[in-house]
Image 1 (cartoon, rainbow, N blue to C red):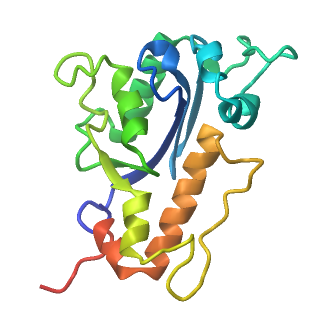
Image 2 (cartoon, rainbow, N blue to C red):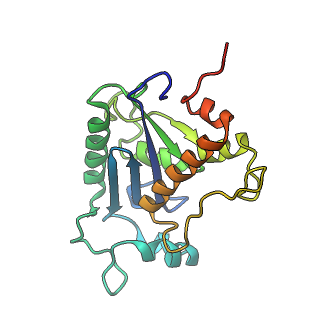
Amino acid sequence: MKAFFPDFTFVYGDAEFTPNLHTPGGLVALGLHSERGDLYLVNADSDREAFCSSDFRRDHIWSKLPLNPDGSLDLKHPNVMPYEDIADAVAAHFYALTGGAKYRQRIGIVANHGTQDMQRIHNLFDNDWFGRMPVTVPRRPFLDLATLEDLAGVEDDRLPDGTPLPENPPEAAHHALADARWDREVHEFLMERSQAVRVASGVERLES
């Protein structure tokens, strides 16, 4: 929260996954974005058959991954790695953002309808908060964009004065890193235009 902790960093996160598959194969991709850099990882162990059983997921999400001509994952691509290596990379990313300190006063996850996104991060560490999961990894979503839109009075993707939210173009949407970057764009847009969002985001204090 910038107003309270000047070195605080918003980390925008998005995951692509098979909704009802919480095994390692259920995660497809994870994107993390902040003012301090990006992390984009694709799960070499993802269950393609389960994920692509939905035409929408196959055509609009899987198609945006690093693929071979036959539609399989390009396992030689630098962003594609085994599930266990994704866990190590995510831990290293949060360590770098926090300097190895506890996350609470240093970083906060911002996501759009982010319950599952947060859960997929925790799954990387077996949901073991007091053992395997480092203290640098956030235990909770800090903000959800859907809630912030409610606070700003957004309806049908427009502010009360009719101003539209920033567009997430179809060619980018449903790519985990592109969605995380778009989350930042929307968050900053809402903070510029809504005091309620600025207060909820910790960048402005109300007069006592």
